[in-house]
Amino acid sequence: MDENQKILMGLAARSSHILHQYFEIISTYFNKESDVPVFERHVLKQIPISCHVTSESILVLVANSRLWDNEMLIRSVLEGTLKFIYLTTGTDEERKTKIDEFWNVLPVIGQIKSSRRAEEVYNNLSENASQKNDMKFIKGVILSEDKINEIQTKYPRKYRKELEHKWSYSEIVKELSKDDKHKYFNGMFHGYGVGSHLIHHDADAINFLMDHNARVPERRIAKELAHGCRQISDVMTYSMLRLYAYKLLHNESVANVWLDSYIELSEEMKQYHESFQEIEEKYLEY
Image 1 (cartoon, rainbow, N blue to C red):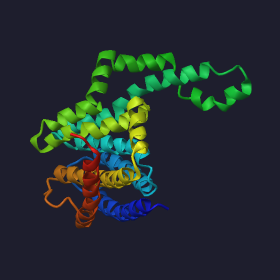
Image 2 (tube, one colour; image 1 turned 60 degrees about the vertical axis):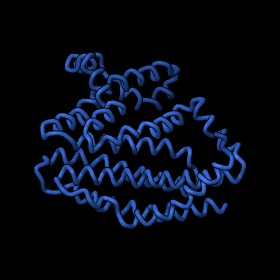
Image 3 (cartoon, helix red, strand yellow; image 1 turned 30 degrees about the vertical axis):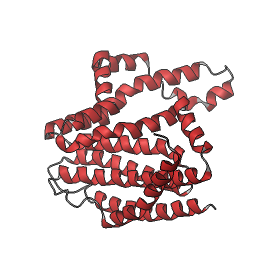
């Protein structure tokens, strides 16, 4: 095992404990007595739970130096975290509407696309009875034309398009950033964009990997350590933001949302960021 992987493995192990500390605190809000209706509490807690599980996977990949694959998972947790914050903000009526759209309306609208795609798969299977039987679960996703018409009547095309646009990542960030305390969310397009390139496996994504692999060992190792530390910081930041959102929802102080254990770890990780910057300075031409 390379020395840099040993370092990342140790940092990831410590981060896993801190992540669990955050989750223990966040989970106290799941069923906390408040003016938030029980159904809304139930829906709201699903995102922090899902984000936490994916965050655990991210730290496993950090420990194994699979950093570029990790960017795709980080993108997912980032989007989930911002959606969670979006769902917790606004008046009681606004929150009620958004939770209904997120949990009830968007999934129903999405059934139309899922049905069309499943139909394409099923209709293109051979007429072999065995194959049709093996793929019968696909057929179960296909809606009847009557059901599709019912959904389209209830949610006209214009409404569906507007709602899907409203719930896009860019629109959520723009809406949240209108509030002065969330204005820094505008800076969260870059990391999201990197993850998107890797998900779509486009030329930019391939060039990321080529650039990394072409570096001399000194630059590559320094970059890997700084990259892994940044991903750990991302995971911790998103956990903090989910706690922050719950505290705001319950009208609590947000003064101490950073755990001391993470502050200590963050200070230790600074050396890897500083080392990377110093080494890069030797190779970059301005």
